[in-house]
Length: 300
Ligand SMILES: CC(C)(COP(=O)(O)OP(=O)(O)OC[C@H]1O[C@@H](n2cnc3c(N)ncnc32)[C@H](O)[C@@H]1OP(=O)(O)O)[C@@H](O)C(=O)NCCC(=O)NCCS
View 1 (cartoon, rainbow, N blue to C red):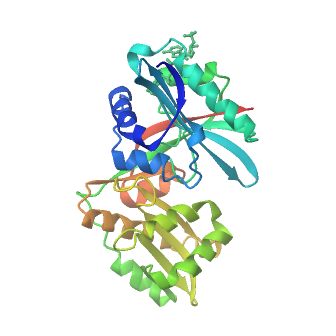
View 2: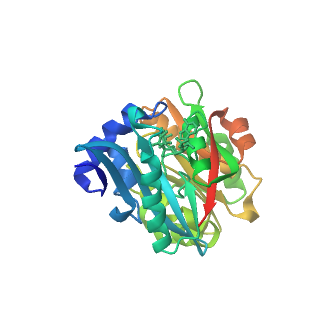
View 3: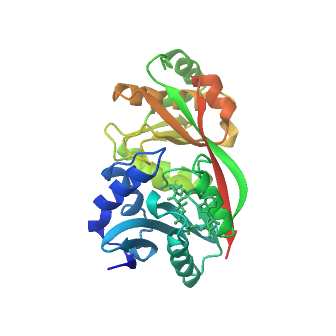
């Protein structure tokens, strides 16, 4: 049997070995691949296509959709064609099958990899140079870039006791979130950072809960979370401080508390993805740019 077909859950192990053999700069695990595909909150098996030649899987494309502030966007979340089969049109067939579905579903544009709140990478790492050429040929345009930072957890400490004492003097308490805080935290996020709800809910699944908060006059005014995406990889974020309380050092404490959690879990480094305020992370925890990603978009 040769040609395109739809995905089912039993394909995950083959997709995993295909990815790990043919994506030169990344290694997935089964847990991560399942998280990226099956555990996406908008998972739709009709948006995942495989290509087989004589029964052997030689490529796949995994897509997903989002409604981002009223805009309907289709995303390529993962895509691989096995090296011996490249430049023979299989990527094009896979992409067109997905784009046709996006059109049927009323998507206005397509983006590559930077899927809010459940993504493997926030764009294309330009070292995957054939992918840049491929998406440009498919009609995409580059509209920006972003980066993942890395923090060395072994060779620095993240003690925040002194700063926390000072904040307490100003009536601001910093502590780990608990289950009783959940509704208030979700309300705070809904008001100020609505796209981050899903990752925060995921961070509630860690033990201890991978979320720290700042409270002022009985109300949550800032939070930081980790392990809400790419489970177990040291993935930091999201974090946010209410505009009225910015500039008081709350963010740096909340960041360091998350990094200390990861250090306690035995991780050697943390990834601060899809940044954003590079200066902030570099200043407080010596974060370094580890990878750069180019972001692409196509109107359909
Ligand atoms: C990106 C990828 C999926 C493309 O798959 P593919 O099956 O080789 O793509 P196609 O054969 O359909 O290529 C279609 C067109 O894209 C362009 N293209 C693809 N690879 C190219 C390359 N290495 N150099 C220049 N142009 C290229 C060409 O215009 C090509 O048409 P042509 O061969 O008639 O000139 C494949 O290179 C891959 O799996 N890369 C590694 C994983 C990866 O980077 N995934 C995507 C990250 S977002």
